[in-house]
Length: 358
Ligand code: ADP
Image 1 (cartoon, rainbow, N blue to C red):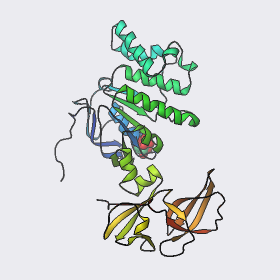
Image 2: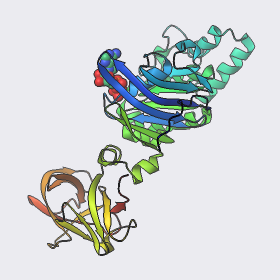
Image 3: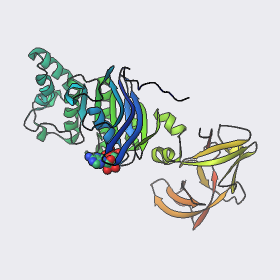
Image 4: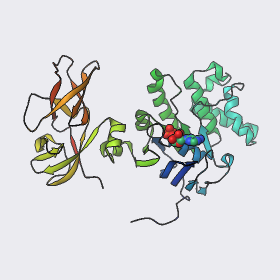
């Protein structure tokens, strides 16, 4: 049933309802609705150009809104001045003030709000502690590592107790080798801050590990919004499956003795399938890297695939193969003899049948 009520902007946390953003004739964001509860982190993820930054900038008041509404902490902020919205923005380059100390940077917004000196000192000390910068309080940003500068920007944004924290590609400017550790560190700081957070990222690993919920966008629209587990286990479509998990989602025809895929050219026996819908009917088959194996079997339960690429990954060789126009990944032992084509079968229990798309 279509909901014809006015967009809901009175809820606590952040509510983006039916957001549309245009640049001239280009519709960069179309009808996007996302909610961030007061205690959670929502990661907006998707390929470059899908409208993530535009969405974040609209919440910050830096991009005009062509349609829809934005609510924060029970107020309609759709057209409010950026400085009065109650958002804490950490831009991609962190934009810390180079001529101020770490403590000076954190105190900046508190000074602007004319907070009395004793309360200001207390709040700065709290933020230094939260971001583990107490020892570095007197340093200038030029004397810090990239990860430490990011923590300064985070502490400065959180100091003023915003209703929502906005992080634009928080790890993109940092050394790739350090990102794993910094991601865990950021995740811990965000949960102890207790502030509603909206993160924009193009990196699916970042979205999966930082988001309590994920909003996946493509070409200006929202494709799926849910917990990482929901998107991982029950992707809305093949794009979501591929983008988040490098998985393949195929149309399948279920019968009591198994599932037929690739227009009936591959018949997977029921005993090889995991739990899922039973009986007759249309379903979808989700295949991950660990769902498939190379087999000697040459019956209907296996499908022949052309080897497109082989990549040594230490404990295995990862093959990229093409079966009737669908590209799959499959891991084989490093010493396996592989020709130009292979016979593929599912590893029993590792392929999942999903209910049909609505
Ligand atoms: P993402 O953050 O997902 O990479 P953006 O929100 O930056 O995507 O951009 C979405 C679309 O809007 C892209 O096609 C981009 O080229 C366009 N766009 C973004 N900012 C502007 C702008 N200031 N003027 C014109 N087009 C823009």
